[in-house]
Image 1 (cartoon, rainbow, N blue to C red):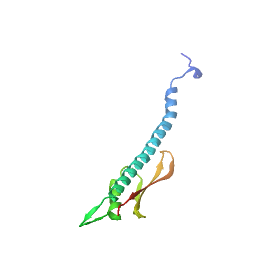
Image 2: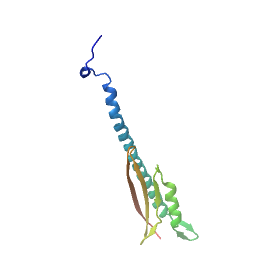
Image 3: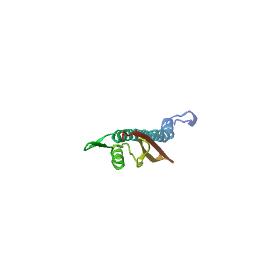
Image 4: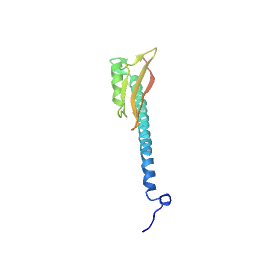
Length: 134
């Protein structure tokens, strides 16, 4: 009968190391994915604001005059151009009129989730001025 000394036997060491490292690796990859969703939402907000600003500067012919789009139409345009929602919430604010411009604003709120623990609620807010000719 052969005697096995435990301090010289390394069978199964790789399995134990993998069992300890794998949960940490999976949590880090999932966390990177969650941050990627924030970047995607930010890109969607910037795109929607650009489309809304472009639309706000248009001249809609009405007889011999030119009318700018209504605030409701601008807000609807922004809401339709948003992408990257994931499991967060977008909020499109009503355009605010200033002297010669409209202030457009979108915010995104998402509760971060990192598999083994819940993270903070992250809120991104972007705004853009659309200068109008009228």
